[in-house]
Image (cartoon, rainbow, N blue to C red; front, side):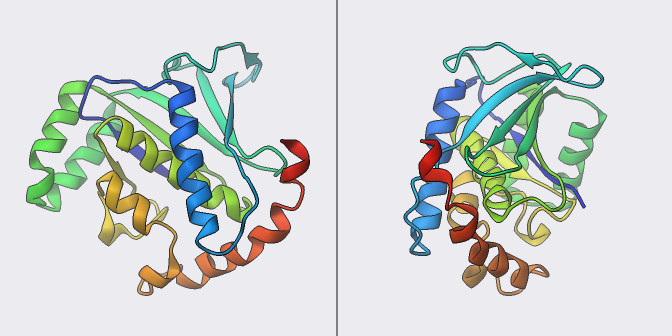
Length: 211
């Protein structure tokens, strides 16, 4: 089953790919180090046309992390199979539906944030297909939280990417709690998060060779 995170900015700032990768890599490394895994992982990105061509698109790492709607970004960890495809979206019926679902939850802290997100008029999604390595299951959340941090935004999902009761979430809270089984014992996928973390040493054994 595929799952996704939506990131809604509340400011006009669009970070560069370099900024996003640097911040997300920092959070990903801090996460795995907290579980006594010292492999120096890093995140990377490529840009591609959508179907049917799926051609690689040339871009600069210092470019703004906003791309045409006929393209998608592929975020991955060099040395590990798999990745997360990401889309830059102008506000559409899906985005408005997310905002309406958040408003139904009647969270006072998000009243102004959702209004600001609608004014900005754009958002990103990070998607993960089923069967991805554990490091990708962790990384796409770190990317979403990091992009929210860089845009003073928030993270939301309603397809099982994370505990719905903890969403929407501001970036500081999300980045400090996401995918940590010891902090999320009531989540339906609690055991799965523990399994994913246990896979990391084997998954990351070739990463050093790729640096």
